[in-house]
Image 1 (cartoon, rainbow, N blue to C red):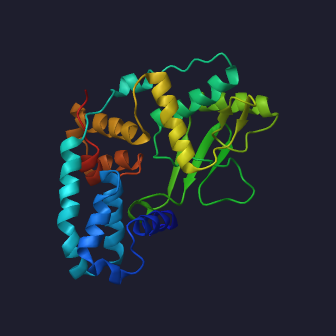
Image 2: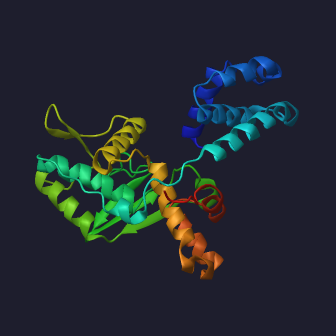
Length: 270
């Protein structure tokens, strides 16, 4: 299990008062604690965390609640809020050109090449290569992903971006800083009128959601964007004529397996 997942699950277990696996034997108390959580998503995370430490016999008592919550989520799922064409057509306009530059690029990279929140604070050409990092050479941006949610099933990923919009963005940032930017994404600090890095992955996710809402008029998250991409791919006429290998390669660009894309990300449009 990824370290980031362990942190999330450990936090979820503490929220419902689970210190050791023996606490799971107090079924009624644990269920009550789970039901007091504020949303289905938090409840499901808690149940996944329980699954990781429970024996088969223990988890059998919680399995029905997990299935019930999953079915409830499916019934309440909303359709995709926008089409892919509408997503691509989001316009970013600001009086301050540097704010327009960075916000416009955050929208662009996440709507055209969505990867959950994996773009968070990615260094460019670092001296010491981190787990996830970028290189920029001869106008080609290359992403090296060695740590992400489903790396065990997909393996490390190398993604190349041969894109004039990306080249223009890096060129403008280079002019702004006086050197090649050290990171791909920056947030605009309205008080200092300067560029800053995001303080956390959560802060980056909130910033992205805020500017998506501001410029599109539609409240959505990176997960909604990924669903739009997957749904568009699956619902195209030529999808059924693709080979399994072609489908696999297509979905892997969004860091999904084919089965996950079909089961969880194929949604209708409003």
